[in-house]
Length: 191
Ligand code: GRF
Image 1 (tube, protein in one colour):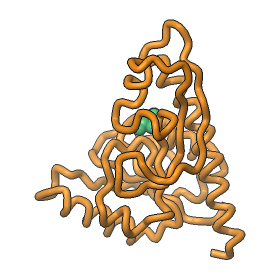
Image 2 (spheres, protein in one colour; image 1 turned 45 degrees about the vertical axis):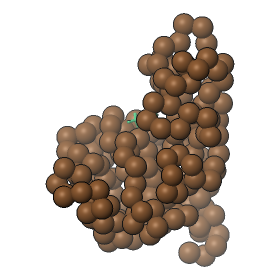
Image 3 (spheres, protein in one colour; image 1 turned 90 degrees about the horizontal axis):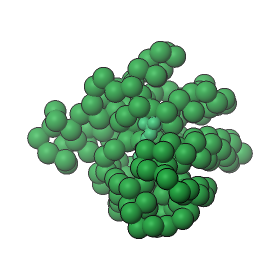
């Protein structure tokens, strides 16, 4: 599939792997992380995808980090930037530059349970259904326009880890289908 996708990830990168294992693989031009030695980078390197790191610890403040990440992304000329388990809030320069081409996957049914502890928060609230959301990124924390959602039932005996693993199965499928659709819409628009 034609097009240029850049993926941002911070952790184990199983969502990234789902993209790599799909026909979208050919469009993934780079994977970026906010720190070295994360498994997501290794997953990309092992299939020959370029990687980069923009580590906030290397910058004076959040503003400088935001500018550096934006510059890095601009240089890659992506059609779509996918935050797939990137555990940082993107700054105004990145969001402003890529608005409408910048999406995130979140392990809850937004607007319920935004933030970094969505799975734990859903469990402790006592909801019986949670899930995953793919949304455009805006300046807020998990507040951007929703693109697609998938529900996941909470079953008796679930703990944070078992529930998160089940949500991630839904997240992977949803992310691949949303990114596929966005990239093919782009193609139809003649971009
Ligand atoms: C996903 O649930 C994502 O929504 C959350 O962190 C998890 C990343 O999983 N922000 P992985 O690193 O891709 O396995």
